[in-house]
Amino acid sequence: MTPVWKIGRIDVDGLWGHANIDRDTLWKQMFPKLKNYESMTWGSIAQNQHHNHSVEVSKLDKRARKRLEELGVEVDELFRFRLNGTQRVWGIRDREVFYILWWDPNHEICPSSKKNT
Image (cartoon, rainbow, N blue to C red; front, side, top):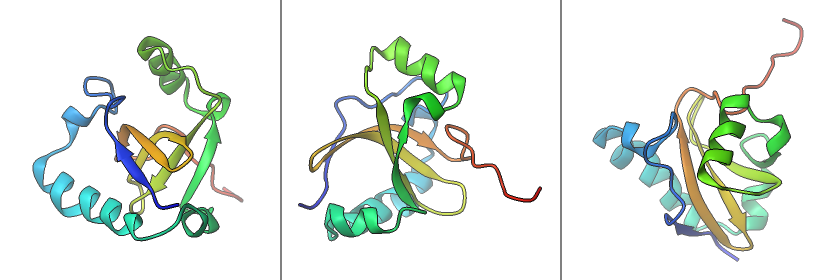
């Protein structure tokens, strides 16, 4: 199964809403990366767990959990694609379908804590 993108649940207005993406970022960074993922299977995408993986909602930043509640989204986990160093695309994976939800340019939704710091 290869990914299928859906935008019906996209958050436009929130902190990580897609209204915050400038045109160059959208066309030169996000779309090319997502297009590349279309040529991969979900199995190969998930093999690189450092970049792309599910995260339990309970581990998300409290602002993200609150926004999910405001949007009426009731899921146990979200999936995220790493686009580069800090940029992430978050959404809901349902089999082969990925419902795009958030644009996280600064890795704020689920920041990682560096070891030994």
